[in-house]
Every structure is written in C-alpha cells, then in structure tokens.
Amino acid sequence: MQTVKDITDLEIPSYIIDSDKLHDRYDEIESSFSNVFDDVIVGYSYKTNYIPALLEELHHAGASAEVVSPLEYQLAMNISADVDPVIVNGPNKSRRYLREVIGSDVILNLDSLKEVELAVAASRNVNPVADVGLRINIPHMDHTGPRRASRFGLTLSALEEAVKRIEQSKLSIGGLHVHVSTKQRNLDELGKTLTYLGKASKLVDREALNYVDIGGGFGRAHPEMDFDFPSFKQYAEKAKKELNKYNLSQKQVIIEPGIAMVSDSMSFLTSVQDIKQIDGVSVVFIDGSYSNVKPSGHNRNLPTTVLNENLTPKSTDSKNSYDIVGYTCLEHDYIAKNQQLSQLQCGDVLRVMNVGAYTIVHETPFIKARPPIYLRKGHSYTRVRQSESFEDFFDLYYL
Image (cartoon, rainbow, N blue to C red; front, side, top):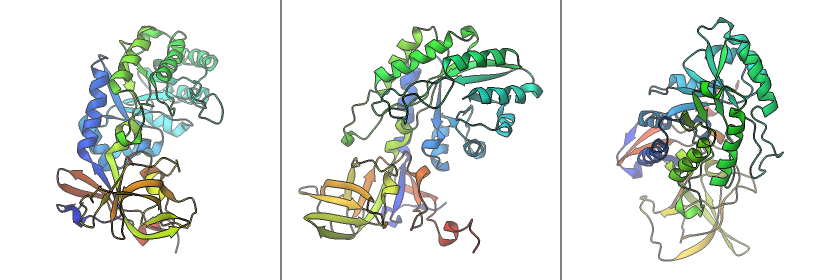
C-alpha cells in the first residue's frame, strides 16, 4: 500500500475514506445503545460497504461482523482484525454453508423453514447443542417492497412449526431477529417492528433466549441533505421502551447498522472535463459517473464542494446552477440536476460527499475501469485499492 503526504498527489477520480469520521460514527452508535442496554453487540453490515481497510478500521474500533453470504463470511474470516462474533444472516443458506457455520462461534439467524430443516440435519454431528436464531417476517412499514409484506423471515405460523422441529433436534433457539429498512427510518416504524419481535417471543421459550437482534434501518445523513432522522440516542431509548413491554430489554441486544455507520465516511473526487450550454442549462461532464456516487439512480443531489486543481476549496461568493453528468453513454447518467455550486471551469475538482453506503458494492465494470480508494488518517492518505488496470478489468475472461 502506498501512502502519500500531499493531497495533490492523489489520483483523480478516487474515493476517500475518512478514518476519523468512521471512528466517530462507531463511537456515537455504540455509546448511544450501551448507555441504555447492559449488553450490546454492534454488528456492522458488510453488504453496505466491504472495503477491507474500512472493515478493519471498524473492527479495531470494536464492531463485530454481520454477513449475509458465504463470500462475506469468507471475507470476515480473512480480515486481520478481531471480527467476533460473526453474525450470519441472509436468505437461501445452502446445506454446505450451514454445515460450515453451525456449531462454530457465530450467531446464526435462520430465515425459513427450509433453513431450519437444513440446520437440523447439519446439527446431528455437532456437540454440544447448538443455538440458532430465527428471523421474523414483518410488513414493510412504508410499503416500499413489491408487496406489502417483506419476503424475509418466518411468519408467526411458520415460527410455530420451526419451534416444533427444533425441539425435536439437537438445536435450541437462542435468539430472535427482525430487520426492515424504510425511507422514513423513524421511531414509530422501529416501534412497530419490535412489536412483531415481541409477538414472536410469546411463541418460544423467552427465558431461554440469549439475544434479540433488532437489525438496522437507522438513519444518518449529511446535514445538507435535509433528512429529519432521530438521533441514535432516541433510537436506543425507543428500542428499550418497546423491548421492556415483552421483558426482553435485559437480553443481549444486537444492532446491525450499515448506512448509518458509513454513509458520511466517504467522498468521491472527480474532475470537470467539459461544460456545455444546452437548452439554457450548464451541463458539466466529469470523469466519474452516477454509478460512483448513487448507483441506485435516486434523484437527490448529494452535498458537493468545488475544489481548485490544487484541491483547496474555491470561493463560494457566487453560485451558479449546474447539471452534473457522467462519462458513460447513458442518457440517465446524472449525478446532480440544478445544483448550486461555485462557478466551474475545466480542471476543477468536485468532492461529492456521503457516498460511503452501497456505492463500492454496486460498482459496475462498465466502459471505464474503477478508480482507486484512499484511507485518510490525519494528513496522510494510504491507497487501499489501486486503480483498476486493463488486466484487472478483463482478468476473468479468456483473451
């Protein structure tokens, strides 16, 4: 890994991970819940951003790993920092995968009756009895899914069947898991989600439960994005209030933040290549694309700072309106529309913020190679992913 001391030596375009922000956010989340609950595990959601250097920063800070596939589980096993305990979630777990993890030092949450069947079979050669958790099916609070109900977890009727099968096996039910992510991410939705966990707890041996896993879905965004999310302290207090209703607040509480943990920890540096006047609009072409900053294609402009070629902020005395577009040949490749920025010229650098969540994991190898990633600590920048070469891009193809 190469470390550079001068910011002007950074390759453009590139991503910057802010180590200080990452640690600050972890401390804020962990302390908010630990001040309310006696025993808390913060399991960072790998699927949100699995840059190894970012994971190691979070694990050194104290985060555990929450994984949803064998690929992510293998990554957790290869990280040099302490990731324990690994929380194994996700649907469609295979027989081989369950054989690998069951009875090991993981927290395993099963998603379906099929997984219960496979886990029961896998546990026959395990001593002593292995604990498993069960994920509970709940509705989408804001109807964001294709259908009103989530496609994940066990309905209450399926949960009753799962309990019967587990009681006749070498498994025991050690925990319950709920998770749903909504646009609003408000306290009422958290309360409704935990109501379903409470109902499920009446169908199992509540005294035997070791933990309740309340998932993620917490909100956190840059102040310029105008989101009105509760604080982590408010989330924790609401969770305590709801869990108290079912005598569950004294259990070990697991949370699985993803977006809330890393969204504001990364920025994207990209340079202005051209500016066109089209139909009365200033259209700015950059050497990045929508897939670098918002691969989901949402219409919200991200907070953006204009830098000179020496990467110092430009004057903000006057603002102009710009459409920012990417390098691809796709008409929908818009990074921003009608964004107010300092007057731009070719060679300026845009620092697009709040790109830490679901960007890297959704990067598309399309038209152009992927840019490098740097980890900033103080005034030093360490390259933690090199810029993709032609050979990297086509390595898996036969040429």
